[in-house]
Length: 261
Length: 250
Image (cartoon, rainbow over all chains, first blue to last red):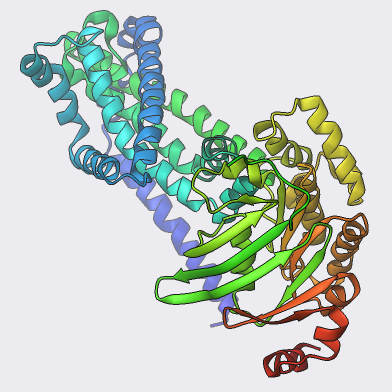
């Protein structure tokens, strides 16, 4: 058999498998059940406008707060980890290892219930506030490692050039090292952000007031009250509406920054 | 001690400089000086310690022992404001080390604004003047990645000049360039020398050393083996090691 013939046959087989799989799924699926359980238009109508004005809005707000907080915490931790002072390095390492090793769900639970009992302290913003602090704490641990890797990826000659021009270490960091580090870590940081968007769904464990609910909590509540899973499908669509434009935006940003690499 | 630069002493004076990386002693007691307005070319085989010596002069390398005095200011003294001294010492690297995230103009103004506290308008005017000097006035808005190696190195020279340094250190400035781009960079350096700039040049360009250098210093194995006028050191070397090295590179 000629190589081109073989290639064509192989390609044809791939298409055949795909079509068979689609047909099997289509035949086996109970379309009526799917339609009534997941795509009930009356149930869907009930979810509006709350799913946008409360749930999606809260998801975006929580993500933004957790990401900004995580970036600030992560930057501080990364600088501590690169510090010449030993105790700072150990402290940062211990923090990062601890909070990367724990499930986010457990940390949120801890901040919402264990910390208030242990320290007799009510976090600002009630349960949602406590959960958010937990998200920031966890995000900082992951982002710290990303930022550290970015800083270390900036060539040593860059620091030498800035220092040889008489720039202080702080200015060298701010105007030479960090801008380049953040360009390098834009893709992994985007990952952290998208993971964070989805991690806000774990906040339900903290038990939230009605107006504080984010997409998943909102959808779960609707599912219970309506005895129908359509709100979950809506929530899933909402997540995609949030994440897809975001990743597109970052990809565009990355292309723009290419010339400055 | 007051850290004001003086003009009645050598620009650079190095006394009994030792530098070790771990167990590896790279500089084994160097005495070396560059007078004001003098162009000194340092040559020698790779691993001879010539780049380390140059990098010690603005303390990018920390000396193990010894004294380095720049315009009368002891830069090995703990109390010396190193950043201030460095604004008077221009440095050009083998790998250019331009800031890739900034355009050419911002490369030239950044340290003027951050370290010399110049206003933006003044910094940009000085930057454009120095870009013109290296023949790249039209590249102010380009990014380093859009320039050839030779152009990048000329921008790097302009960046150092924009700090109005009293002296320039060149660390093998043409070694990373394609052969056809070396000439433009050397021309800029020749012009600088003609303008009376104090220069310390670590180089493999023997032609440049012969033509532009006031003095040539030959280093090998972490010591200064021989130094003198270019025509003497390059044309009639006294020391066996110098003869051996020159017979390989000339």
